[in-house]
Length: 185
Image (cartoon, rainbow, N blue to C red; front, top):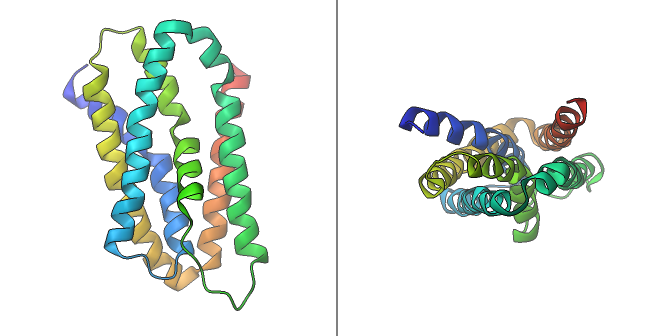
């Protein structure tokens, strides 16, 4: 794969993590730079590991992984998105927005990286250097997720619960779109 192809792949694999991070940043009271980097690191590491897992599974059993990856992504993104939406709509009005815990961040990162696992399965069929590609995807996701947290912070000051609601809806929509794309084929 050419460097341009790897770059485009890395950006495309990172967009959903960026959108999820926007919603997360909007839901936090004052996420600072360090918080954004930590969240970005979680998303980046997960997004880097999943194509490696997919590649390994693709080498072993690509048909099985491709048969269920969309259901896993749908379930994880739907659950996290529904939780975000519920918190935004029905959370206590006097409660300040909060930073999600490591568990919620990790579940969101896993949900947004299932597509990277499917890409890893596909890369198993090519003669591509999976380690360079996975590192590029992980780094790009880290930068985009940290940027999303910081941009979400700014949007959260102005739009607060609306942005958190939109983030939840976006995650549910991504899960539904992944499921639809796989079932429509």
